[in-house]
Image (cartoon, rainbow, N blue to C red):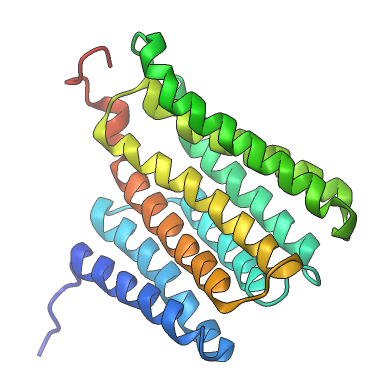
Length: 235
């Protein structure tokens, strides 16, 4: 008897369940988290493949580097600082490469009123990142990587906020969650390691990890439509 073919939505639901189990069970014992964490990374790639019937090696590089970095992240930020930031740089570079065709699209007309909310959000991100840099700078084992990674995080966040402002395609809303999720993940990881080591902060970082990966996956699946659908005003 042949098994029915996997459907992309079924795989996505399974990946979501793996995320929930990862958040809940890894809070009890980290060993369980190490076994569950790869499942939703594999599931997200499988969802992409089933949805578009093709491979995406840049997306695969993003998932692999993100997984390695975040496995170190939830283990010990200070001990594996170099590995974490190095993997983050690779993952961020892969996403910026993916976003580049969207940045090249002709932007819609931007008014002053449209700049208010993204401007406030961007200023808040800049303030938060600079504040964390000054707060944790003396504690960081590799200061060059810390500054480099922080600048890249800031650039990445601004790009994620800029694209929806320039282009009104509905799928670009995912970018707010992608940029915000990564920012929250980084902030909570540093706060947990260097300031307040309470479980709720670690849980928040794991939620941010899952939300970030889910939104990247959904956006990568829809990015062809973002590039080619001209039905939106001033697209």
